[in-house]
Amino acid sequence: MKIVPLTDEDRVSVRMLELACIREYVEQIMEKKWEDFDQEVRQKLGASASGSFSHYRDGGLSFVAKEGDKVVGFIFAQVIPWIDGIEKVAWVENIGVDQEFRRMGIGYLLMRRLAEESKKQGATVVHSSISPDNVPSLLLHRKLNFLAEDRKIAYLDLSTF
Ligand SMILES: CC(C)(COP(=O)(O)OP(=O)(O)OC[C@H]1O[C@@H](n2cnc3c(N)ncnc32)[C@H](O)[C@@H]1OP(=O)(O)O)[C@@H](O)C(=O)NCCC(=O)NCCS
Image 1 (cartoon, helix red, strand yellow):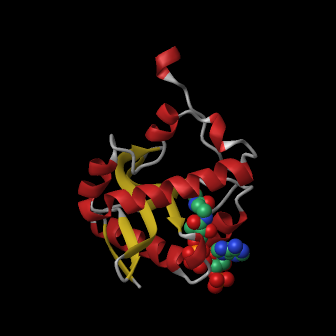
Image 2 (cartoon, rainbow, N blue to C red):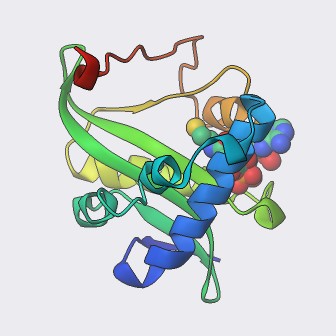
Image 3 (cartoon, protein in one colour):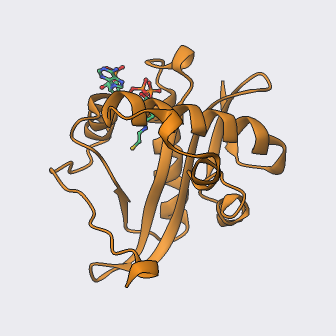
């Protein structure tokens, strides 16, 4: 297994894997039906969506885990110039591992690689959104010594403002 920077050749497989992870989250944690999200909404979900893929590919902080040629994990992240008065924050947009490859340390290695590379880019901290209901994610963050308080992020949809 190797962790490598995200490239165009991973576009289709990482899209499928990210959507599978989002679907799992929707069904198991949000307890909603995937079918309730129409095709147009599904197309926009995730960092691997066509509108944002190249942004993450070019930022140097997004990686895939590969077993041979198979994409078995991903992390999409970017550096944000300022958050809460902190300069250069690495923001984890999404992380996911193929169900058949979980509990093998892949999520941990993806997150470590992100931390190393973002430090090289001058980041001083990594922010990641966690849901207290998502136990594997919470425990992964704890293993990496994230301060994982019960924090959620509030959104204002500016299209309705
Ligand atoms: C969260 C996720 C990325 C973890 O990936 P993973 O490769 O299975 O994680 P790792 O094998 O690297 O586990 C690292 C540590 O996290 C914790 N952990 C991960 N999954 C766990 C589980 N199901 N139960 C208990 N602890 C778990 C453990 O502490 C583990 O260390 P250990 O194996 O030495 O005990 C994976 O479960 C996933 O893709 N979930 C669906 C998508 C998702 O929820 N993403 C998070 C969005 S923020």
